[in-house]
Image (cartoon, rainbow, N blue to C red):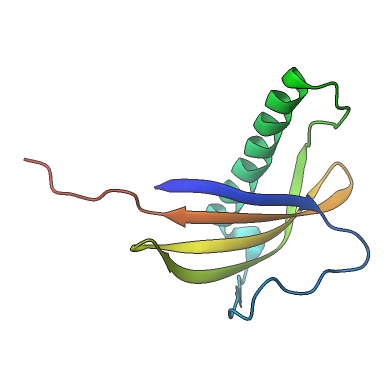
Length: 114
């Protein structure tokens, strides 16, 4: 399984308009969905890795995020370049603020073993 963090942005009080007219489905029982929790934690980890790489090359003063909880999650079944997958739109609480993470999850290879 391949997870790719497409976007991670801090949500402001004024919510932006939806990116597309695609139909996103809300995820129910967030507190019990371990897969969503894993994806959200990985999104924060990936953001922090990118931040550390950026900091190493620049003197930018962003702070490392500490995951708190998943506020909301939506899914979208999608096919890109002949690969089916699921896109997740997560609202994550970290460092006392809300962030939106867009994550694409797809199977990159699946074949029988001898």
